[in-house]
Length: 471
Image (cartoon, rainbow, N blue to C red; front, side, top):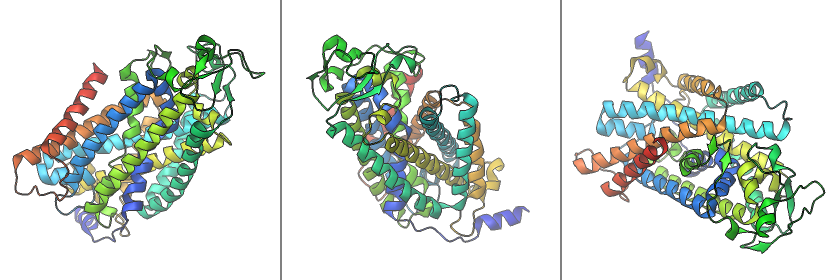
């Protein structure tokens, strides 16, 4: 039986030859533009102010760029095979370091599957279900059913994943254009929520309102809609706009379990920048991994950062602060011409990220199994003849993600995911740092836009963020 397994694992398989666009850029971008894009950017702006939200996202993107530089060096150091950064770390620093980092990479992506599936369910239940129907049991049932459908797509392989991703990419682009266009160009005021106190026990008994983009403008202090009960941001200062939401506010919210701190918000929104290693995880499916991974990943992260900047400034300049803090679906309620365009965007963002993470985790597990580092994962070395698809690894990743769904709450999963990704990025940066300073003869990356200083800085920043979040 063992010989048969080894033969199966090592048998020649037809490789998927994906391009930079559909094998790296689109998967990375869709993985980055996940649940936080539509559901938590406004919350960050409401709590930290526009300047604070910009600072948190900029710091997160700095970690992302430094880490991309490190793993771009890793994946261009010699011939690339399936397994991405794990493959290169294990080949460069040995099985002990590679095996520990590989297990962490794999489990982190499983948690990311859970996070985005739960986020999708939260959007569906809050949009289409009554408050009495929005129960924990119903959420778990919807999340489990959704995850099973994603599992079936993942079983089909990377080619099916690329085709589905192209369709999802079009849906997400349409939704983003509608959302950003509404924030920056709509000239009509709109009632978002008649009474915010119905959404949160901490919210005031006021109405949420969207108004045309402004730096600072006057607004009526009395309700202008027959269903409105008032609006606190205008009733107190008489003005709205970007200048009125520049600085942080003292906020109590269910999302933070009480008074919100910088650490609470950072833990919730950091998943907005994860997913940048998706191209590296699919390295075995790329036509030219050494060229596609650095180029596609930098382009995807830069595109996502621009989208986040536009959403942060747009929401701060148009939506009252209380709506940003207490209405998690504020973008959905504001969107023109229909809220369902944002529902489409959330669905596309969450499902594509969950699917990409399931693929990435399975490829990493398969690569570890083939290295025979852990006896209990050797079974997952086998791959299908067509495309070398890791179907056994997909099954295990699916089961781990399913267990995570029983946690059930988006804001409970987010800090766990943040810590796992921070550890993952720390290991990646440290691997590149140690290889660069050691001067070992097998360290000859073709990607040269990095140094030991950038890798060390990336590791130090991620470690500092972890310490801050957990003290």
